[in-house]
Image (cartoon, rainbow, N blue to C red):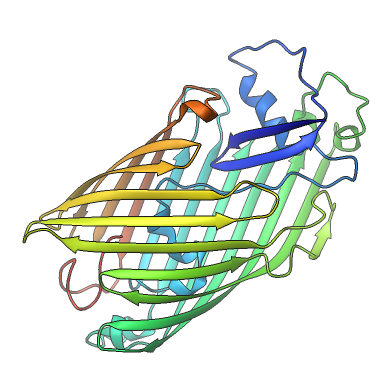
Amino acid sequence: MKWFTNSIVGKTVEKKSRCLFSNIPFGKNVIGLYLTVFLFLFTAGGSLAQTRKYFGQFNQLQSYFNPALTGYEGSVVRGLVRNQWTGFEGAPQSFFLSAELDPMEINAVENAALLGNTAAGLHVIQDNFGPFRQTEMLASYGARVRISRSTNLRLGIAANYHHIRLDGNNLTTEQANDPTVNAYLNQFATLQVMDFNAGMAFTHQNYYFSYGLQNIARGRVYRGDAFIKERPFVSIFQTGFRQALSSKITVLTNMMYRIQHDLPYNLEMNVKLMAMDKFWLGVGHRANYANSYHFGFLMSNIRFGYAYEIPVTSSYLIPNPTHEFMVSFFLFRKGGVNSEAGTLIW
């Protein structure tokens, strides 16, 4: 038995299983496919390796990780594309699209971010990698209570629908009769899972603290081919701070820590310098996995962000970088980045 750790489509997969690929040639055109097959290695008991989504700009997707942060930045539509291992044919890709609405902003209420008490969001993610296509839809609802003039306590819940499609025709193995994979060779399998997330947060224009819990039902509500037996609880801690150094320079820091019993801990952080409330430069680090470099700019109600990510030496698998592009459009925003309506960037 041997442990495998791999980074695929912004995911970590760590599994205990037999090595199926010890004699396979190491070629540029096939290495990506070989590595994606690791996603499908089973233990003797038949449980599938768990996966974890990674985003270099995780701080821009707060409400996806914790529904309590739905509407924290107001009514906004976001889109993100993540291209991993650029340069390899069939390299993994992730697509993210979300919309969040604050009814108080729709009604043009002044200081809606402070006076409003509900918000709703819809998030859609699609991952394509090797034989797998995963589509996730998440509907979130957040409620908030004003503690002080500038501080809110937020609670949130989300329903999560996950559709996974496996194309067994794309599996590659030197042991066609290996029981860990031959049940799905040369055929298709689909799995649909319904689950729930919840969270709470303390938010301010200049800081936030939050805790979220994912997979509350542990994947037990499903239909289709049960090639994932159970989904573990995931605890997510997020925090961020912003501090003005001068009238033109602001420092922004964000951190996320994830705990999942069947995977190593995940710690991510980034630091950005924002100039004149118009553009920013930053660096990020995912502990034991990758470093990233960020830049972006604000133009009226539009925000654009880019992250360039490269693996650290300890997890070096493929030298090709990852590119991540993000665009946000704020629907009803009035005032500047630091207006009382809220903040346009974390």
